[in-house]
Image (cartoon, rainbow, N blue to C red; front, side, top):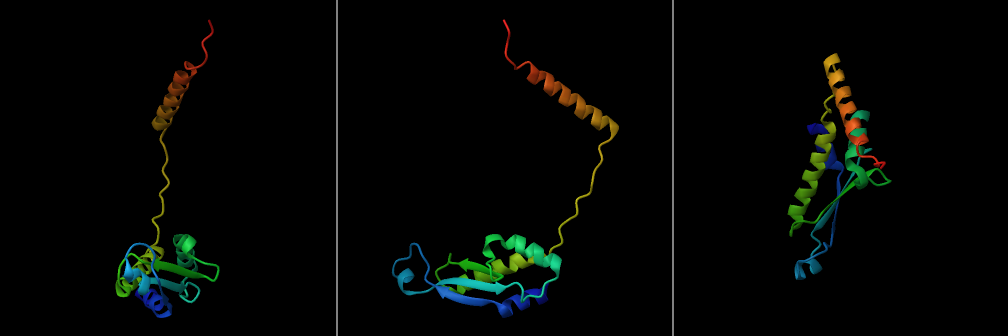
Length: 134
């Protein structure tokens, strides 16, 4: 896992852009927002991790195969840079984590009978809700 995160930090490209929103003069004159781009093809991930990462990235993944993360919640470049890198690391860690396999369960005979009896009772209850003929 550490190797993949190190590789992501090596190939990540940062661009500082002007942030929007409130902040007065600071917003107008300082480019504090960070746009972090990591090419997922350059990471060299195994197919299963690669597929999970593309699912997790969602609309942050562009046509060029780059995950683009915008960080603009802090007032300083350094804080936004840290935030963007932490978010990227979380995304990669989540993709590396193998999902738990769901164990199939079987309903026993008594459980099936109970379920069917409950369905029958619900059906009868709803049957009484129909139109009333006088």
